[in-house]
Length: 111
Length: 111
Image (cartoon, rainbow over all chains, first blue to last red):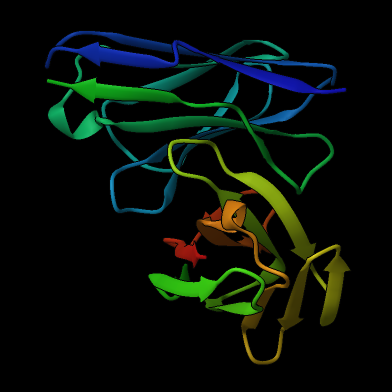
């Protein structure tokens, strides 16, 4: 069966510091991968999605970036965090599309 | 673009039936999803409708009317554990399986 992992589970970072969140999927090949952010009182916002290694599409221009170095690995990064980057970051996969399944999420607090 | 509307909050009593509505406006519809999200956790997949009609899955059913841009999630025999946020998401008729989520409906089930 398929499983999805995210780490870390929680993170507290100062403004201006870098960020790296990792997501890995097991039990499936060539999944579509997605990064979402859920801010307090707001809906899920799609940040990035990837249909294959090295293929990244950005939905929202911001100071975040994503990379997919391996088939089942998806990384969300930032060089300098902003206060507005605080939120609940969720990775999701689909294989085959369209149903998406979410990982446990990373709760990020930028101070 | 898309516009998805759901009620912000609903309350219901244990053992009762509740209907959560979702209306959407989209340039190219290609499916509607319902997810359940408990506080502090990731969303979990409940249902997927692409054709008009009712899909039943245990205590949960989901209905879609494409001509009206309308869906509802019906929860029967409510239990306390059904207290959660219910997210409606629409898939557009594009090349990739990206979803646009509504802000969710917070359901509180009381004894």
